Length: 187
Image (cartoon, rainbow, N blue to C red; front, side):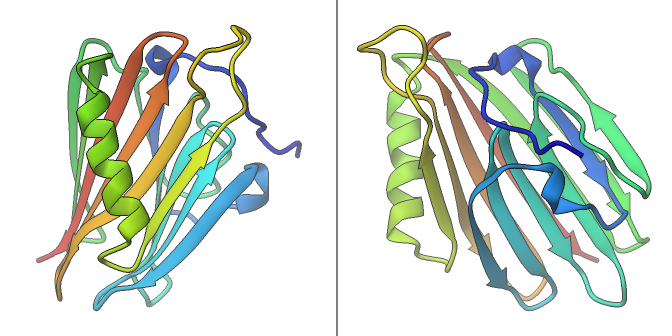
């Protein structure tokens, strides 16, 4: 299997894939990653060549993957695919393992209006207030002098039964910013 590598993609090509099977993470080009032990879940977060993935290890052999990328990836277990998303906003809500509430909110913003939101998310990620913050600046696009694409991942909140994550994906070639919010909760 050839790993997914970085390509200057379009925000309109992003797809959400949810998988309950254990994935072979070698199918992705992992550019940076981090791990967080929350009270009810171990989170492995990674910025990959085409966006990000989250691996939620819920114990007892229960795994949930969120992959936001321009491709779905290979999954041996139950797989749910959404997108590419149309319009400026989308919401996905699912129940997994009869106890895990999953909520994903996707929002696209035009630049320059989205810059303040990008800076807020990146500032929090770099300050790392909840134990996990990642940022990766990709090589510049074909147009020289242009801002480089960037992906930022941060934990915005966690408690004994809830984990909230936020990501920002900058597409300067399209003057677009994609912001996602993922909430995982038990009960």
